[in-house]
Length: 401
Image (tube, rainbow, N blue to C red; front, side, top):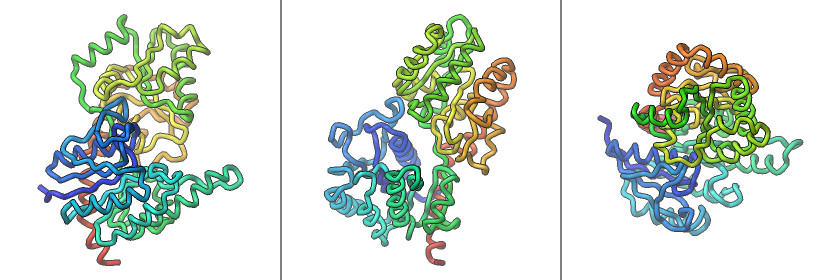
């Protein structure tokens, strides 16, 4: 068994604040604590300004039992930098500082160079950075404001990369960008984002939920997410077309934003009212049960499925057939076609769903492959193994540079 480590995880988002990075950080902190490691999380104030840890994140779910949570006085401003120094003085060495990084999550109008400079100055610490995102795109002719952000984000990213013992990426798609900021392949590892829902559901609970949602034996499709502006139109189109093509199918929208999306869909197709179901803002366990009750899941993404899509991982972890699309960010290093029904664009999802519904035997085998692939490639246990391996190699790499 590997020696226990002491982790100091710094994050711009943590429950009760809602969001994927906060959910991931809470999951990871809890899992590390369960292995016997000492875990400290440093995060901004809670939603109510207090230091209390409450429910939040996807469907009000994850917190981090076993971890010590240290709340900062503000969102990584001047007072927080002073508080960071004081907190670190109270935590024994040796330790690993692990930054959960999204450039928009650290205040200062999404351009917090002072915090990144502070991080870069911690040269006596073992430091690792998990890039959930790296930088906004630079397209001066199309979006000047976003390009200014992108330029500043690259300065911030370079400060974080320089001197890091290990660099983790949520998807291989970020690798060229972090390499342009000075990272080498020797210190970069991809850590796919695991499901942010429970990965096991009791069969009795699954059957009960299915009877509740499809009481007359209808086939049941689902879609899970927050249904933001980039995802909602394609999801609405796919669900509407499946319901129009298959009259014995019901659809359930799962997650925050489900009610808003359903209202938009029904405004265009009011005849689907009895077959469109809403499961919004469920506790994490109930969201997992609802996904498990479905015959298959459909998840369109504007930039394609990637290893950072926790909504996709939730389906794979539960052994559900997932119909989704490739895109600009879909990793060539992952054999997605072997574990999901992969189409070229969101517009092709409806036809793929109908085909699978008409061939139920193929959905069973594909779902079983999805679960096995998740366990061996995307699970939280694999994340921790890869983190430990990267950090065990780090001293030799640093010494050789």
